[in-house]
Image 1 (cartoon, rainbow, N blue to C red):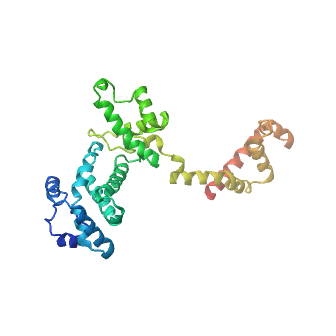
Image 2 (tube, rainbow, N blue to C red):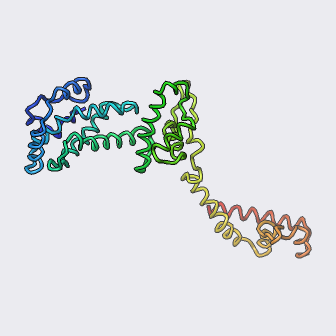
Length: 309
């Protein structure tokens, strides 16, 4: 991992202080940034004006390097999210650089106070993107609730009277959180559920014994939109309409009417068409003869449908 201690290699070479180690060696990095000298208010003003007015990158580098220890300090507060400390520092450094770029020395505010917002904002964004595969907070209100809820919940756990409580929040704790954060109880409960839930693999890998693991993909898959199933469905629809119409065209009028009455006609009351005996009486033949005509017509239609498909 390359060092993000300074905005660039040229700036690092121009920097009169010792070169900060890579974040790959975290202990050496932290030790090095803690040895970097702090700027006096006068030096900070001087370098900030040089960067703002003359785009002096060396001056910007001194502002960045002198505040790297601040990023390390802030990042430690977010170690409980289970994300690598080096990554948290790296994101915080990006926020620090953004702060230096936008810092106005004429506002009467020290850079340390101004940079805190940018450092935390970048770390927060990194946590929300990487803490779960699916974002737990998308709106500004949800983001605020996410971070405040976690810190307050930790406070409950640290309370001596709460040591016997389960990991889940009690009704009393939910009420306290909702009141102090000025949100509804339902919002606290929903965010607690999001934070407590874990990631589930949609398609888990087979187990060590070779058996396939069961995952949500087994019941979430929509087979109706699978390409092969869609092609088969379209083919069935085509055969049921255009194919049958083409097959009926191959029959003589009598055979066609017999097939339509026996298989395709549906009355308003739900009943079918004429029976074998009804058709036999109409054509002056036996019911067996009507069945024979029907059988021959169906074979002819089957050949026509096969050719159509």
